Image (cartoon, rainbow, N blue to C red):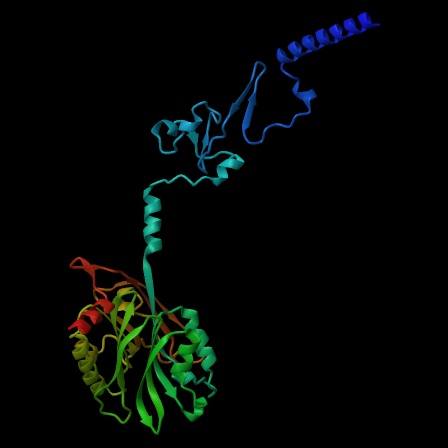
Length: 372
């Protein structure tokens, strides 16, 4: 029994040795192993061997013809040699979607980016007729909606009431400004026991200074001119809002007065208003020659602004003037459902120009004054 047990042990040992040598010299059949592929890498299998290659990161928008090249680790999207192996239209791998798109410096792209970066300011002058509709009803909410519709950031309004019984004792300028979320200044030209009637200036940008000038008059109704200084992202703009009288001689004196103020200002100047005259009238000849009629300059000289209620009076009395150092971009006249005047809009290009190595800003100017 002992001898049989001895040979049994020897036979078992020999069988184990033979089996181990066979496993070491044969590649296992993939179909029969039941093993899952390694998802952490990309495998390329041939009849002779199993080759493992690290996945290559490919910029979005291009593919490499030899996607699993041995030199994939040295791939660079900006290399001249790589440009010969790419095509702009191709299918992308899941891994490639994580990469950044290729930077292509073409003239078209530069032009588009320059145009997109160009900042435009929209100006509006609007005689709101106290929000008094043709049927005599006050429609201030509709006026506010019409102002919102324009998207204007710099606004001059005429015939604005404050605490007037017919308008429900509203402070119209304040209500409009609050609904827009804008800064504002009101210039009352008629003031009887707190009941006022005049012009208003509203701005998306901070108003640094503001005052109301009484214009020369020949008639009973007093007229005024709002003068304001605003800060548009560090750049000062001088803004004037007015509503001239009905008498030609009165208007002539008023234009002379306005011109005297404007001619003293340097930098960017804007004049918005209801001038109650034609742009080529004699009294307007007294306006500073550097002030440009935006509608005429942009080819809209025939666009009338009054009357909005009928076609009997076709005159362009509502206008926007800009100093000749301001680039004009576009002009538009929009009707109103409430006022007898149309809405007049001009877009200008807001440019920050370097002056003596620094930017001229309203904030810098005021800080310099404070230091003195």
